[in-house]
Length: 590
Image (cartoon, rainbow, N blue to C red):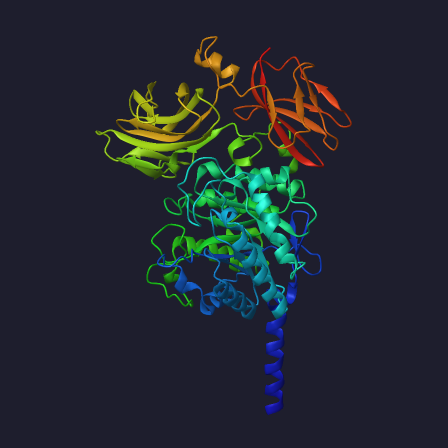
């Protein structure tokens, strides 16, 4: 009997080892878009990201084995992401050990907005972590080199307010290429994840010019599902899938992009149906008990794990349900989802470009209504109850008083006229007033009643931006008004006609043509033709609003004339093919 019990105990331990994600799937790698296991089979990572580990920020106490075990065993997670903001090697190594003991994978993340300014320290940190991985014979570690690049001239890991030019993909790429060899010296196979421009939303810039000569390199996409303006990023994910370009979602939240605000379940369900149909790996933000929407834990929750459902926020309950069921092999219906339409054919024809996010060129300045920098007498409202296009909007808290919201417009290429676009719902007629840089430009546009807040009406107006670089714009209104979303974009010739801008007025001179990625792709104004490098198949022209206005097959062609149907205006020419994408800005003057 004693022998039988002993054998049963040994068998139970053996089964436990076999059943863990690490023991079952081993060393992960990349195959096209997909993460695959040691057998070459697709394997989706679904797990949790810890919060900032900055002293005094409240996230540090959760970095322990009890929490990692709870995520692995109670929540069914197969990966944790550990943000290491100040390159604390001892903390990173401890978390790697905790994950190994729990049998799950770990993403070691340099949680910085300014990593490129600290490249030498990052090289040392990741080199030492990879050496530790080799020493311990680990196969469960993924390396995330740069959390969320933001500004070229940033100052410190947490800096999000420096302003100026967004960190370019070329800068990020050069930084990554300086760190990767330090990892590969000791870990030749581990997956390395590289951040992308503009809070890791610019995966298209990386896809146009990826890191070469290396294997198992993936790229980061971050989103917050209750921010309506992030919805278009789903197409970045689809472009990755359809072009064998690996993207890993190392951070997403159920909330708005601030980490707080609304949790709109329908918007989250849309995102998760899309992600799961595509088969992308993800880590949710975050294991934290801070009083904000994206936190998974209530304020009273233990910092050592072992939580009951009563310890979880709506975010925690939602994400735990996803992980526990989907990682157990259950279908989408088990979590109340249905497969999404992710057919690659939908990328053709009616394709829309959002130039700020995809990094291919720099045309638009899309500022979402919920992402205001400062405001007075205004609040963000969830629209499920109001029925306003299932989005979120700003409304006045006291309809009898003036409300305002202020935004920052970055990377303005030149002083000139731009298009101001807004969507407004109102119970009565009124004026939307706006000023730039504390009065350098003051203007207003009249709106008419939409019969209440259940209807959103869009309009255009011209706006003068007085300087290159950065400007602040303040939008104000009175009464019962909903401001859903607005943007400021370069005005092309068609916009100029619509807005009544007179001939001879300045319309943002971008110059003739300049390549934004590759000097080989250029426009010869003398011959009115494009010079096409080898390895590309399609030339597309987009208006500054992102509408495709022309497309042609350029396979095997060295030169392609600009079609005479293209009218005067400013365009983005995008060349695509097996080599990826490259682009140039083009001003057609005749």
